[in-house]
Image 1: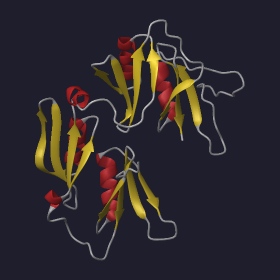
Image 2: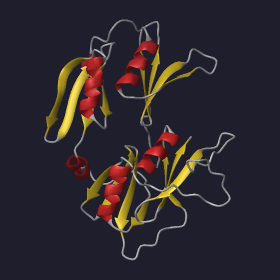
Image 3: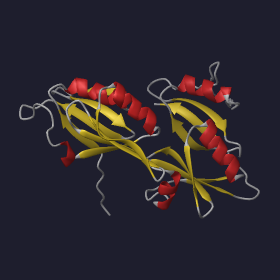
Image 4: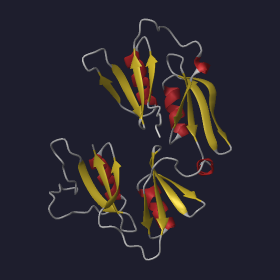
Length: 252
């Protein structure tokens, strides 16, 4: 069955570069430019969703009807995001507030477009059910032990579903299901690859939390245990979770 995916939004502005950097600062993202020989766009990626910024002759001045279309952005730390918006001079339509464990707030960007920042509680996320998209799953020795590792060491969000499994959030678009099994024997291959922005810093952080970086025969590891891909391939480092499942962190 064919499906449609909303993957991007185009915002036109008198100063698209300024607006793109505003969003990048607000949501701790990066700005990239694309041209392909044409005028191109400034692009800000928010967890797989792309905001594109351009300048058009038929669009000028502020958005005078921001309520007509509101960009909803789920964030990991709503209070920190609200503080960044304050520092950027955002005007609040509805200040950030907690409602039944959830956080909502609506502000404007420099062009008058409305943005709603959202953080949903674990209870709300669990009530929405397990992932509706394709996902993988693997076994762990102990679910409580796994939750502490993935949450406290790897910094991932872990949702405990009523059926006795946990959803480990790699991102809002990627959830891995883990579940306990007696006499668990870990696989001899990598079960989860985690993409990171700064591989060296990530490895240092993991080691600082007591994680041992694995070294395999046949690979050339640097002083941190990272294998450098070269020729456009990913750099990668391996380690295990408390159940012995092999994981990796890599840069692309």
